[in-house]
Amino acid sequence: MTQQQRSLSATVDEFVDAFNVNDLDRVMAFFADDAEYEPGDGAKHQGKAAIRAEFAPQFAGRYGAMRFDVHDKLVDEPGRRAAIRWACRIDVSGPRGRGVFPLLRLLGLLRYGPRMVWQGMDVFHFDADGSITGKYSYANFKIPPMKRDRGVPWSVPVPTA
Image (cartoon, rainbow, N blue to C red; front, side, top):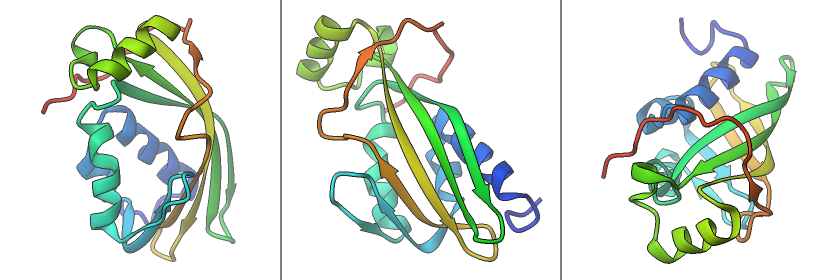
């Protein structure tokens, strides 16, 4: 099924799933060539190469294993937009924490333990073919308001360097 043939709701679900299984190539397949990404820190990344470069450290495990749990999803099919409210769960325990900057890992472990969580929101814009033309994230990315994650551990592939 092509992106054009599936609903935007299904596209968003599959996009989040690609993040959660740590598949950068699959994530990038959802973006239009000229897409833009604004991560919420004031930066703007234009085009697939720039977006891939911005995502690469995350997929290499520089922040630990990440999983996004979607709490709410709003889809405007005629307007070709969608929004999700999510919790980003981060695990820096064992092999999942190997790629994390040592000082960042130590500070996270001391303050929050091996698993932490923070909240955010993404707004997506799509072209007529169902490709993402814009991804706009809203959260504090410089110093996210973390808290200890007391949820059930999840299974995420260990990033390979």
